[in-house]
Length: 234
Image 1 (cartoon, rainbow, N blue to C red):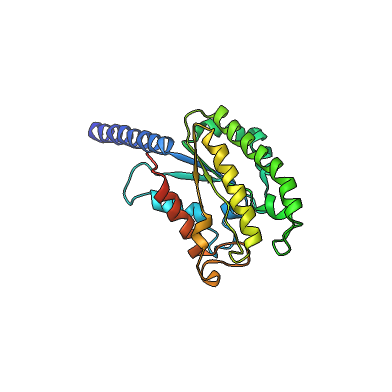
Image 2 (cartoon, rainbow, N blue to C red):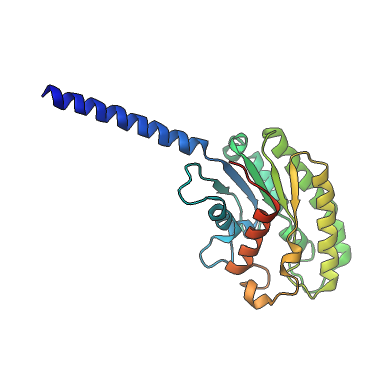
């Protein structure tokens, strides 16, 4: 009986130690918080994964104790105003200081909606009129993330042209990307990662699920670009 009690005590101690270790490992896992629209949500990927889940897989080596976790806050149809509302939501705001990295991929809907909700008949005047508000929101978002978390790098993904053969739209994508990049340069924690070149000279049927959203192969290109341009550290 006494021997059984000793065995039971040893088992309990071992179990508590193991649980504490596992809990610590989970608590110490690096966290990436991703904000954006349907492109961050993963719309167009049949499995619903998009570049976010692809990045999580790419960063986590088999057998590693510390696992990168990505909290995906992408919302289909969202503009920069929506991200600002998210960051002001106490449920999200209270978690910002827990992030080890941020990803921001936003602006496609701002641009498309400024053009009347489509990318067919490009209206230069309307797009230019909305650009200042969009850039102001991007700056506000980056400032907010930097204030709430002074140590987490912020990866800002540039926009891409979903209609590569539309030179008029390409001009606006290039201009918005250029000005996003200028804002990023002024932010100590931020890094700009371009995406527009990824889909140039490629068969759209192979990399897109519709006129706007990538499919699994298209999202994989974005995942690979992020890993190629930025070195994540556990």
